[in-house]
Amino acid sequence: MKLGVLFNAAVGTLVAVPIVRYLLSPVIRERRQGYESWLSLGPLVQFPPGQTRLATYRNPVADPSDGETANIPCWVRHVAGGTFQVFAINCAHLGCPVRWFPQSGLFMCPCHGGVYYSDGSRASGPPERGLFEYAWKVDQGSLLIKAGEMPTTGAPAAKLINIRRAPCA
Image 1: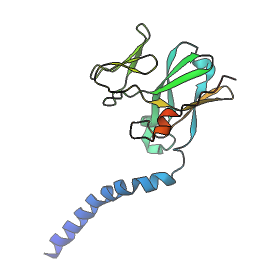
Image 2: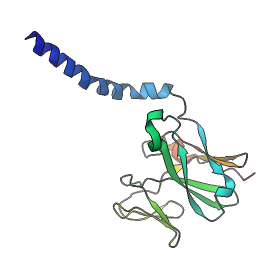
Image 3: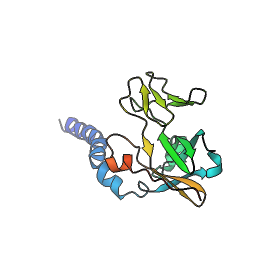
Image 4: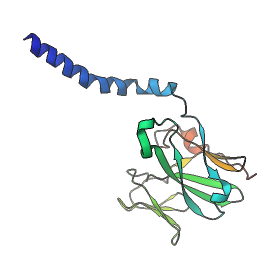
């Protein structure tokens, strides 16, 4: 009887640890540095005017054990005159990675046929909204984005709309 109770207590503890970590994650995450950091995508010369390019950044709160999964891709569109748009690579429908097709000037999702115009707005398919955008700024000849949290519909509206538009230096 005592052995059975001890075994059940050990299994209960093992099951409870991830649940407690999940419940406490907002408190723990708030204390970690990096969620509000500006990260460089590279020098402006990597993003010619009128073109859309794939860029990557390292998740600022990644652990060393995350390896390559901490490198996050995004699409950078240099509109013109120092104005950029930086899109999350994920489709707004179910999060599949969208691809840029310069021939048609469209982003397309291979999973369910979501299509977006070059400005990230919804063109057709199941997504109900456009691509998620990162806030950006230009500093000392580099394009920086505010990253660490994936832009989603659950994010505060200011984080989705407050896109910084800084002129090129």
